Length: 414
Ligand code: NAD
Image (cartoon, rainbow, N blue to C red; front, top):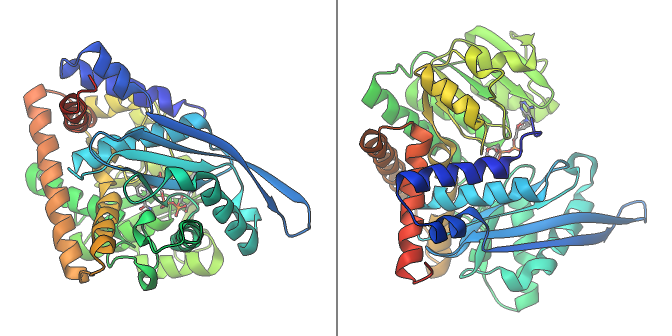
């Protein structure tokens, strides 16, 4: 999945949007590269007493619209270019949903599955010690991503507050509720995607009550399964995780499946579903397909075989540019990642706002405001698509890139 250079893809996407917006060369150069990059190594004591050395980075892609914002990944395959790509996409994502934020991303090259809780805490705290001067509520606000979670954020926030000797809950988002987290964050990414699917169905006549499949059954994938079934009434026929894929054409109970995954650590072995080859999940005939794992899952190799009517990209960068054109040619309605997965960062922004004035909203208000943001972003992208006569990903990039370019120009950077 990870052999494609995601950052080259991200740069190409910026270039295409910039050309359609007739941006000048200086603006294109500015938007094609991160404004700041930090690479460093971390050293912690492992449980066996030996030193553990880990390579890490934090990238602040663009600040024109506000502080950098984006997750931190713990993953063995992370490279500077995957982090650059993810930071670039965060920049356009925050702009598409019109948040007063820039984009950023961070990562630690590690295998979290082989590490103890104590080692993960030590690693999280050492990461914050390395970047403490560069982050803060008005500079850069990290959040969880693949293989990090609210507990990681709690350790990181605590380390930061220890360093700066004061209370700054807004320095990290997606914290546990008890220490400045917000209602509605747990399912925000998936909820945003499901709201976008709802709008696509209303506008284009797809039927959300038919079947749907999910690649990647982690934070985003599990919540999408529950919400799609509960809000839109669809039938979950297939899911996968890093260990394999399962299928039942009659449908599976998302709640039971989440419990099974929690208990056994995998979707495999779920009663009343058969195993299918990993790649086959993406090629099933379903109304809606949610890629919710990692980058480059849909390539020129498998795109011709995809039979979903709608693809809602909860993962960042799951489709390569060649695959994108193939999907477009086949008339598949793609809700691109920077729109489909923007619910998470939107509610993270709501968390920053609440942390600032130390007064918290109820869940209904979070859902209502999230719905308004995603619905409006979905329709802005549809408008751009019509106006520029292009495909949805480029249309979403056009909306995001235009807003960031305008901010750069107003600041006098270009
Ligand atoms: P997660 O770690 O909770 O889940 C990832 C899941 O993908 C795991 O179940 C893992 O087993 C599975 N997976 C890994 N390789 C796979 C493969 N080859 N085939 C099938 N499944 C595979 O991570 P997450 O938070 O759910 O994030 C998933 C994607 O969504 C990432 O691309 C992330 O950047 C994106 N995203 C997440 C959020 C969020 O709020 N969680 C927000 C925006 C975007």
